[in-house]
Image (cartoon, rainbow, N blue to C red; front, side, top):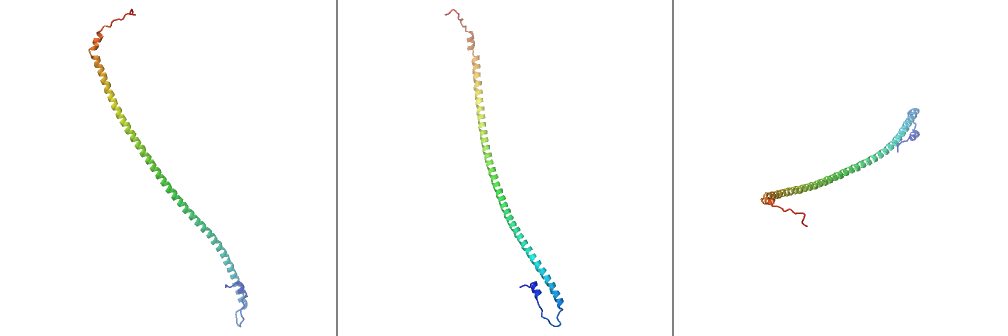
Length: 164
């Protein structure tokens, strides 16, 4: 068990002859008691301060752990959000590519239909033109025939208004 200032103060030494000067020993012991009491007080203050610091350290350690967990959760959430955004963007790109392919295919098919229709219209136009030319040439040939001249020579009797 440690020595207390009271133990030092109450310590009695046996007397002998030719011993130390009693006043000097008492003075020295008083100084030791005073210093020892100061050290005990200082030790208690340091222990109290240490306990407060350890408590604050524990508090900050808890805060650090909480912050670390929060950072990990935030990082995981950010990673998940990034992953989801990447997946969604890939899905949007695939959908856009699919729509673009569909639009291109529809446009190509429509372009082919229009080209076929144009070719058909060209053929029909050529056929119409050829038939129309043939018709006109046939009509011109009919007009060139001499029978027209003979028709012009026929006298048409005049009808009188007396016929009732």
